[in-house]
Length: 389
Image (cartoon, rainbow, N blue to C red; front, side, top):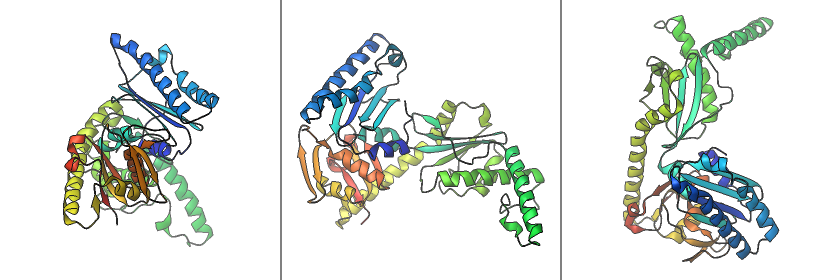
């Protein structure tokens, strides 16, 4: 099983192959209803077979693809489930996700994966980061309201002692180079020498911690380049102002999780971080919705609830913010050459969800997508967008 993240979602979105099979189903975790899980699963597989046949996909090819999913059908697999199951299959991709939210049963077979149901989990419910920092241990997590997954970061120091040891080694190397070049190497360019060292108000240990924080921030700077999700620091109280001085990430949250994170379980970190970031997400969505209403009222053409206009704009990288309703689909196709949208009340062979198409292209092109309950859509529109230009 893969871990679901924004990066993983983008990888799935970039898959464009025929056929691409997307399966969603709610899961029963306990009680006699648990026996319904494999039955529902087999029904979805059967429906996928019918969709493949309708698309004139070679029957043997279709069977081979679905066999990958059928091999999951074991007692052990059904014993370890969450509230929802999502499976994605194409000639070069097979992923499944056991997720902490229910999905309506849905089968989509097209030339791309159907991913809009996941946006409510990842985007609307907020993606954030947690840096669990102590002198003896550093861990980095990517989280949502429902999950917190530890992420490996290249060149991330593991402890204060490791950072100081590496710095001493680097200083030794630089000193030898400087000696051989008669002092040509400027001390300010030494690896391990950071702005802020040498303050008369700090003792040696505080300077070492600042150096450690600079090393952590340097590793995160590469990992979080161009990201906008909030970063929450978890650590003992005195570390926060020191890390703030070293930090270069623009979205470090002002409120930390205080305490030694070495003794805090990931589930507890997730809950504490969510309490901090949830108001930020709610306020952001509210502000974007108010901005949409304002721009739409001005009649400048920079906001729209016209589905055909929105789909074309999403395809051509014009959508900055997009609202789509959860649990609703509009089936059809989009022709990039004519910019025509052909929609149908029921899915026809090779159709895809046009709302999903707009959402995924917006996400891939750096826009923000809000998957909201249908009653929260402005003016009951099928979609609403703010354009970049």
